[in-house]
Length: 367
Picture 1 (cartoon, rainbow, N blue to C red):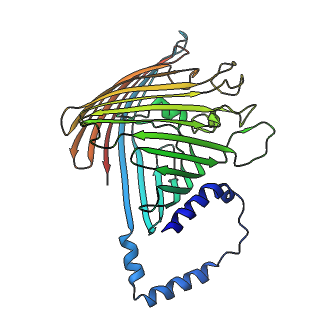
Picture 2 (spheres, rainbow, N blue to C red):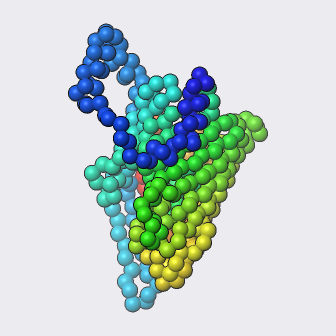
Picture 3 (spheres, helix red, strand yellow):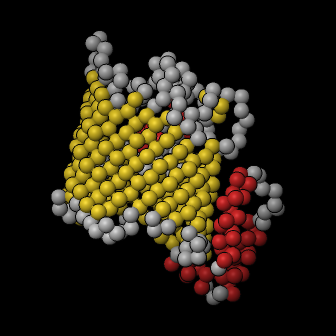
């Protein structure tokens, strides 16, 4: 069993080497198929039967109807309004227990008007110590551990819009009942001007979670995270010209509180640690900008089926990219097992003095 820890420890230190090209000779598909067939024949079909027991399939379907209005600050511009019904999200996940310390995860995602055809949202291999040692290593396409983004609303919080980051990465970490430490290394899409293309972007995160029942009915979680180049986030990489003069790091902090699984508080703050140069962000108005966002939500589970929530969120140096201030209210009701009906309203105000109002209803099922 110690060998598993040695393998994971070696992976933590040698993981970056995985980013280099592999020059070992690969086995042909025909040879591999022949060997698998022979193993199945010798096992009398046991390999095939056992395989199905180690596969877990899950999914999510979200259908939404919405109405939105946009009022520009310019008195000469006309207000705009629109409504639509969309199949907002389809997710299909497959998790496979390859061996005692090896798992595989694939998540396919389809979002109407955004990811057509279906996109491979996540796909990675994980090596973990399980009951031997609290270490793990994941390699593949995944969401690196920058930010928390917990929400009781249908729509994503502004912190997620600014900070969520999906990359092909090497992620390693330590997990215990109290702490989770993690780090990820990847080749970001936004490089410094004149630099070569290398695996030189990274994320580091630390999360604390109070064990269940440690403080009676009170639940507490909190954490900090850092990203070496905020321009690599999914939200900002499309708002830059493809390169930046200097990398700008990002910082995130969150606190999550609960009381008797009835009352919930979610608070998060995410910010750039320096200014982007003028003109590097499409929404900076020609000046230096250090975009930041924060989110505060209060939720109350009034019954086992019904939850209501309110939020106040905002940011700075966001131009017309995200609202400078936004408040909203939401309610969700569990119609049946794994079936939820939710509705929310949001009012947002931008630094440009434009305003928007959005009303959304959602029917979702998970399996």
